[in-house]
Image (cartoon, rainbow, N blue to C red; front, side):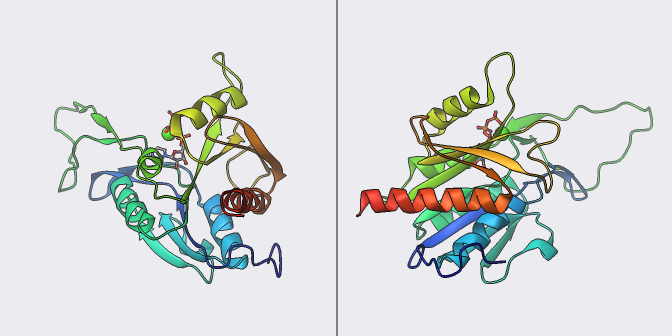
Length: 233
Ligand code: CTP
Ligand code: CA
């Protein structure tokens, strides 16, 4: 379904969207992963194509049946592969969107062969190391005029509300736009309604939306268009 038939306001732009969730391998058959389906990134990619952009979707472990038509798909599995693909795209993309759920940690070592149980029943701990922050490095290496968009799923806790955490993250990451979702027991996972606040790099609200992942995509692309128009009216 085309969200805005006829609105070709992204024509002439090359955009790259990451989607899905990265996997970090313990051995050839086992990984640490997350539950991201990739639907938000796919909705963003599809909406951008519908609005006239040339779209690359960097898809981390996304079910093939969900992949949209009319976009170039680069399949990745690990955070290192996603990092590589995004930085390669950054050389020519006007807009970069990090909608993927990136594993924060990976096993310090990956066994080349399948890990066997030990005869004595002893269990080895898994040592983890932190992954690079792809969004932060895309922001750091941003070309002049390029727009970088991040996503953040937050829960409120004793330290602060969803939006307080979101504002702190927006300032920390420095992305032109950070889309902050409230996640809880019934929001943000799977195909359920979503509410989103778009924050600028200073943590200020620039737009809000609620509804489906398609609605979120519309809010994000509208804000990107406003940003590009402000910069280059
Ligand atoms: N992200 C990234 N590289 C990472 C981790 C996250 O590029 N290693 C991106 C995500 O794709 C998303 C944004 O950063 O666009 C925010 O992700 P999130 O997990 O909310 O932020 P973190 O910095 O990992 O903070 P937290 O400790 O809350 O998980
Ligand atoms: Ca994280």
